[in-house]
Length: 272
Image (cartoon, rainbow, N blue to C red; front, side, top):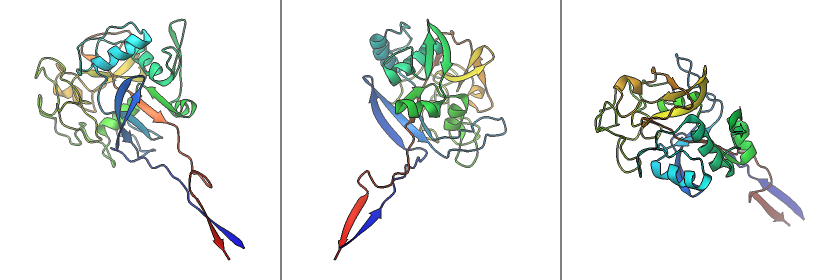
């Protein structure tokens, strides 16, 4: 009797724009996948990312912040309410929020805090392998790619064009409604890679260090349209807290492997 083995391989494919939802530490988070790993940077030098990752569909809300802050004791009260994006959050406390999502501990995760001070930041691919799924503030390149990468190049705005969005309709800027609008409830137009409000609403922290500062991108509800564009780069002190600055979370899941002989993919066929 001969036995023939038919082996199927399992390959994980990351396709840009695919949405997923997950509950982490008691809050629901929505993500879109950003694929096309190894893309080139644009003419400004930003946007190249050598791995697939996910980025939050929406900015972290005041309600989500409150839930984690209550459980983790971060201590930063934040600003705005409900489904409005949280704001007046320092870069350090946004990083602690991400740590708590990853490990259940504000001081360890992608960011290591020792005696209250930031002492190291883990490479994001390494973090995905280490924790199975890691959460963090996107680097400037990760943020930039999620906003402006078209799949073959870059657009000036996150809507996939070089034309500014309509204020108060497509996105919230230039004091169109006087405050951040609620996220995930029909406000604004979906952007080219499946995100919302990477143009306007609140500035968003990124991980990248610029001198003694940390980067922000995307403009806010009371800034002019020029701040929404890929050409506009800004930064604040990491201790800065103001009602126009919040964040969204990015994530790297554990890398997929090519799997042989396993995971339900082996068929044994008997021949007489």
